[in-house]
Image (tube, rainbow, N blue to C red; front, side, top):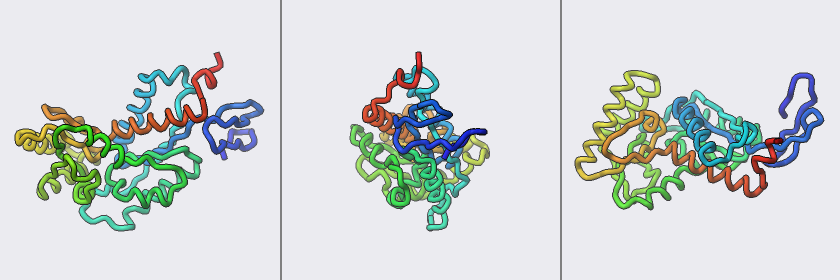
Amino acid sequence: MARVAGSRPVDPGSNPGAPINFGGTQMVRPIRIGVLGGIGPEATLMYYSRLIYRLQRKGLIQCNQDYPQVIINSIPAPELTMENICQKDLEMYIRGIHELDQNNVDFIVMVCNTIHNYFDIMQYVAQAEIIDLRREVLLRLELLKSKALLLGTYSTINNDLFGTKNIVKPTGKEMEKISLAIHNYNRGHLKKVQRKIIKDICYKYYNEGVQNVLLGCTELAVMYIEGKFKCINTVDILVDATLTKISKLLNKTQIKGEVLCQK
């Protein structure tokens, strides 16, 4: 229940577009997105910034009231870059999902690739629907005419999170370098060095004919790795999936900009 100083509690409503009473005034409950972030924080910032930019570019925003309500739960959880992940490592993630559910979000976005290895567990404990990054990436990979080098954590690569079709995996030693670079970049240690480590691996495979790189970790997306190779950014894929979900909810509830913006 939301509360304003000096007022009675306001029922936030269970559905977007549902009228709610706020100090005697009828308002429309906006779409409410739950973001499980903080893993790492800069990737969450990138997701939110690009989501806002894309909403503006699509012409969905006529005034500030047209933006969805975005509840970001930035959790200080384990990075999941290690080779072996146990149940205890997932506890903060599960708690973060519960906290978002308590805010009656319409759907949840997990801004982290590796946690999607445990998507079924997360969706089981969640009340709201969680966007499935695995499915979205697989759809993108099907459009490729050539193979892509998968960069990510041990778990993402070894568990074939994004399948095996059109996927080239780095060696075990390279995976070790990638995981360490992710960890160091997230803590702000020698960021240019970490970026070069990743870029060198990309160019090794590019010179062997692999022209695409799937950035299978949100921290890799934040590194802004550029080169002759083409990067597939999973943060952008999450933003695309979010926009698709928003559009479906808008069509379902027929919420338009003019409903919220009283001209």
